[in-house]
Image (cartoon, rainbow, N blue to C red; front, side):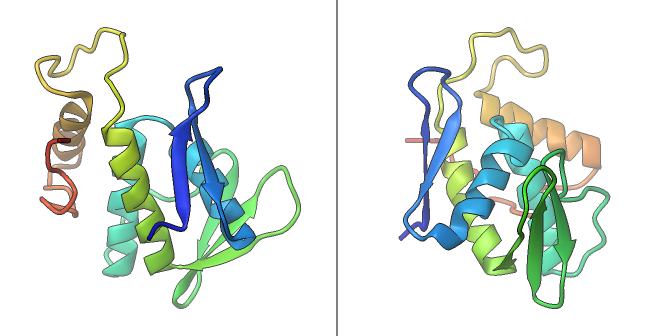
Length: 150
């Protein structure tokens, strides 16, 4: 069962989250702010967390505008830029939260804007192909998460 749930805000149509356990508030906040609200952001975060888990050097990082993310021995430490405090999560916790976020974000209807890159595909598929083209390798998640939404 997911420890963070995602939905769209009724007013602004942006992702928001709920965590039953207060311990996951920082992780949920990092996902909907620094990871962002597009398949591209979710793909980048999934690739980095997979690289971190496999101790592969990644060209990208998990830190963003709102949080500094630091790798510890077996954990990741999230430090908000504009608030006090920090939180530590295992790589598996971050991975699970990102996988759940991918499931949510990839099922959202495509934005009404015009896409130049592969407009013939659903947005999540176009984002995946673009990521692989830009990075010159298959996405580390392979086929694990990238099944067409039902």
